[in-house]
Image (cartoon, rainbow, N blue to C red; front, side, top):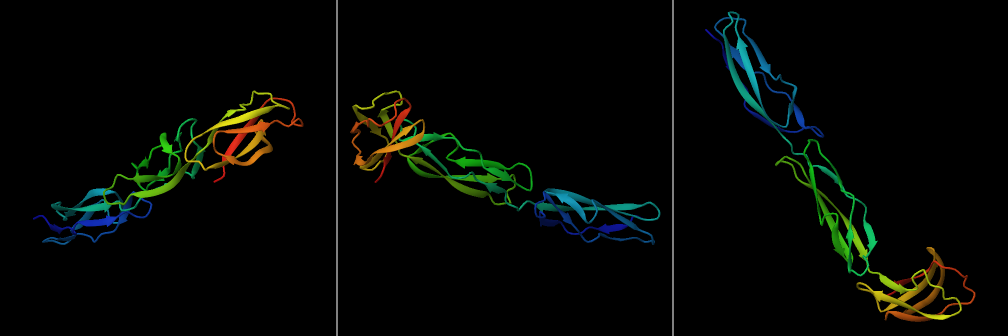
Length: 239
């Protein structure tokens, strides 16, 4: 006569922190037989690590005569742990020439999860055209589990309006003569601008602290200005 065996009820648990599964301890199955000496084994054993998903545990009761009986139950481990996501730093860029915006590429956010399969989506995505002003980029990390929440972070992309200077362009020689600084306003700029002179990227002097943002400013190049090329002007909106 085979023994009788009764398994525990099905078990559902959440994953252990930072693990794609859980260590689960369960009550042993109960077994009886008409003769003493019945032995019970369960696989996987109580205290084993169970991966995310459903695992069937098979229990076997064997008596001294070799008769046996089996039962099964399931252990389900749900992944309830959200991913972790880190966004890039805020980005500030000038507008693209002649455009009231800029194409901006950024490093992808870094995401990790206790289980493989995390995906990341950025909105707007890298490589989009961002308008002048500040746009908030939302990045979302989603793992493969329907039981865990998504994770999100944000960062800002700021496109600053600029002034496209037409002249001097760096290849002109004007010392001692009068010339006109000309520019084209791009984007939402103020009514006045400041005009500074640079040479090879280094500040030289201020041409005008404030002048109307009308695209032109007459300027007599000082005799004391060093002869040479590489001069450029930089216009900055001041209101």
